[in-house]
Length: 470
Ligand code: SF4
Image: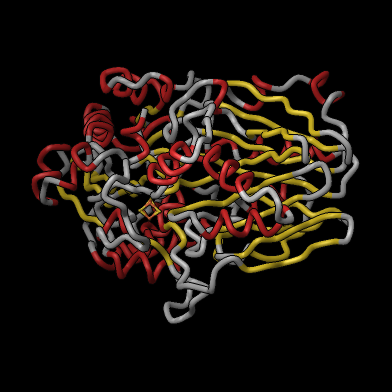
């Protein structure tokens, strides 16, 4: 799981089911396969048509749920969430789905992403008398929806969504309907599938596969989907804009068996490795990838360069979750515990170590040192993405600019700091080529802001990097 090693974290995964008698169990299995997107909290809320019932808690999905809880979660509709606690901070109250009950009915919300105008909206709501109970941006949306109570719910949701700026993939549910919405730029992934007559929605397609659902399509940027007893209905709350799906989903966050916007993640990563081998060739004896997310790129590098791919680094899967240990020192200890070099493979060899990113540089330095301690003659680092120079405001904890090593140092300086014999990053053009979706189509395209500094939405003067809120 990437979060355990990098200090580079996804902020959430959402999943929902409508029209299946065992909706809550399906949601549990769906969330389990989205666990890499957030490990600090999980929740499921279900409806039987009359009442919404919620179970949630802190920890992994397997720690939060026991079989007996599903006796309460009966019904044909359910939504669920796995959470990584940057935005709004940690704590039980912020674990989603959040549910808001009123005389006119209940509304449950689960959200992946980050709103760049949340701060301004919170001020506005509080000035108008709203009392916010959590520090989560999601609650802001619930209050916006509640505000114009005289309108039908769908209209109120459309009005509220039109006020939001930033990245959001929402699943929302009342006793009688499931709503699904994606921000106008489509920054976060969100797909719809079918399982018999039931509809399934998920942050990633891997979760559709796990529950046996057939992929139908992406949720369109700026689209609100309503699913109820009459089936699926689509509305637009924003005109189509150029899609800017997060590039880091391809590079690092999503599972290799997921397809994002029609592109398989493993295949895209392999192409990143191939492009990298073309852009920055090197003479070496073996290619190895830093597990797990860089294995695909390492295979691609090996294929293109003709240098054999070997398992030079092994990950120990049964080590505790270091992500709850925030200090740098503990992070570094975590790396040592989680990765081991394979001496028999690297000893006396010139090693190409393929990785997907360098965040602060401390992890890379330790891995290179481990390889050298295990006898590697040379370690050439090749990164399957451009340097991470800018923070993300859209729901990914890429650290603040001050912490990003490439925000302040040249490639040569970074090489020296991490102790590599050579270092090269993939170019922005190479990354785009590797992802391969058509550049001229409004429906496809990627955000590259953490590499280029060119943000696809307005960044408000008081926009806070999610990590700085905690
Ligand atoms: S800034 Fe980077 S991490 Fe954030 S959405 Fe854009 S590509 Fe993804």
